[in-house]
Length: 129
Picture (cartoon, rainbow, N blue to C red):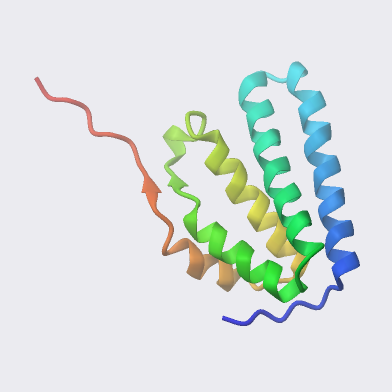
């Protein structure tokens, strides 16, 4: 699927840099929040996504970067609400990709459609004795 991206490579890299700054600020704040380890892991995972997208943006067209981001987003497991702390990396990656789509002006329908194809992690049923 072709995506109409109206940002230049420089705009894309600049926007990703701002997201990295926010994620680094969250890393610094992690020590002062209720669940510092979860907060830290969430920020680190977002940083990883933003760095990967930045490296890609420096070598590819904005349209190719978005296409790759949508492809990778489809691979990130959906995590049920009760397991979000356990699988915080997947939750953070989801947030990072969705932030990236907003930066690029990608229609919400694109992420909604991709979301339909994502694998799911749900609560395991309780064992019955």
